[in-house]
Image (tube, rainbow, N blue to C red; front, side, top):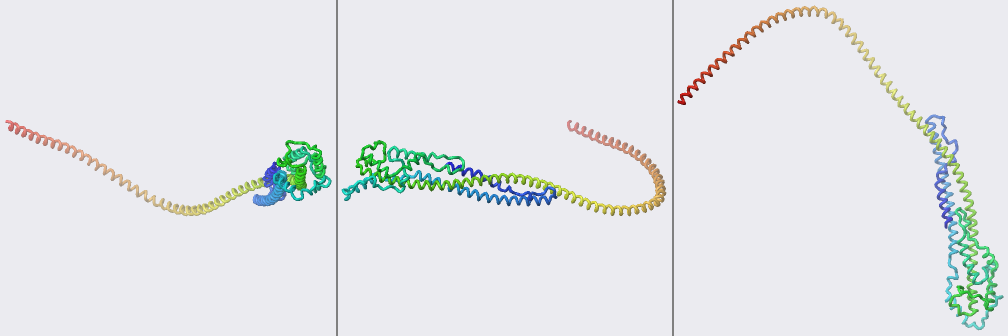
Length: 420
């Protein structure tokens, strides 16, 4: 089963590529023009991207359908191979025959009421099988052993290539087996065996497993009948297996042709997907460039709009400030006129006030001189009074000292009197 697994792996490896490569057949009309304005290029770029996405979805659907078909065909091929291998590995009909039960039934048939009347059939009157032209090699023990060993080897040793060619998995019989199979005849084989038994020239093979141990003591007639029955069963098995092999060969040939067609179609699709992928990459680059340009132009447009808004705001502020300054200027002019009138009034009044101030100043100077004289007189009187105060303080101190001295003398006298 290595060949179907390799096909499944190749199909799985091809799936992710097809999903990405399926949207490449986009026309050049869907690409946005580079010379238009920013908004126009952005709208055309968006429509081109939408067309790319829709076509990509369509190609993904087609790719999924093709993958499903290939998966179904691979599954059918695997089922055919499994059936072929199960048929080859199936136990033969002869292996299911119990030799002891068969010999008991055979003895019952021999010891029946018609035992004396039965005669051994001649080789010429033996019935032939359904397919007399088909057969195995002549019934010698060595040829039978060789045919048994050759068939599984030919079934197991069929080549398996890594490529997805299911026709290589069909079991091919050997040429020697086919020539012996064509020359085989059941009647001739039975006649040869009977002749060898009658003449005693039948070769003895110690390793022969055709006759069981329980049939070793049977007579020649019983062994011949046993071998005839066994040959009929083997011939039926050979016929059945040959029919199954023919059917499976036909199915395998049909599947191999179908797989070749699918492989060719898959290669063609891969090539188209590769070309479409290159085109899609190119268109994606163009779309990205257009998108980047549109984004840059949109950014520039937004910056210009912001600058325009700022200029409009500044203009409004300037107009408002200009109107305010004009109002203030008018007010200032009015105030200047008022101040001019007041200044003229102040000039006329200042002349009068200066004369009055001069008169007041002269009067104040005279008053100041008079007050200075009074001050000097007061300072002289104050100094005299300070001198009188100092004299009075000294007199007071002398009086207090005299009082203290008199008091101390009296106490001293009293103390002397008290002591005496």
